[in-house]
Image 1 (cartoon, rainbow, N blue to C red):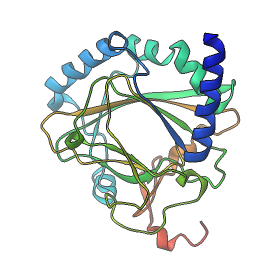
Image 2: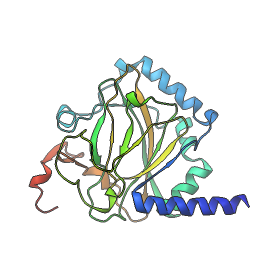
Image 3: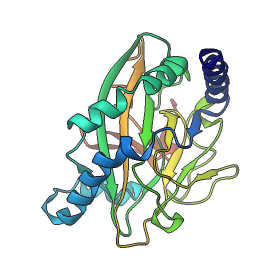
Image 4: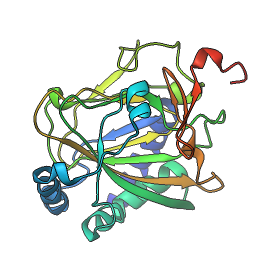
Length: 246
């Protein structure tokens, strides 16, 4: 009976993801399952100044991205968390049984930091996407930076128009991160992270996977409201209004 309920739940989750480009799973992990990683977050917050900056000055200036990467994605607790049986089952329900695990990271947003509106990939086919599997190890207050997503935006290119990186978009959905929450987001789904107005860092864990046949470098060319950027060469390719071939 439990297996049947899980099958039904996974089918609904898959349908929701196909429609909206993301799904939110509150209380996906229990307190003990995230406790060890949460302790690592605390440890690195105390050593914040020892961490190198994550983004180039041009990237930060153009797209209003300010964060650092915590070196915990290769730790055993991180690997155990994302190899969780239910995590594997939900992942397979979204991308199929055969998928490629790419890489993981832990992005920490400090005071005044955030991430402007962007899509992690700019491919024209909504079925060729990278799946972001986001997990939070603690509750975060709204003023620490909510996750904003634009439902259905994975089905079209770019954004409705050029505009402010942190400007509001009609239909945006605000998600307040909570301990144990998992959010599954297509790389084609527009999203941003609100500005952190507190002294405490805000951390999200992410382990990316690709459906079978999707190239590993799909997210090398993200699209922001204020233009295109190529990660591999750290190059700004111009504002969206100049992308006549896109």
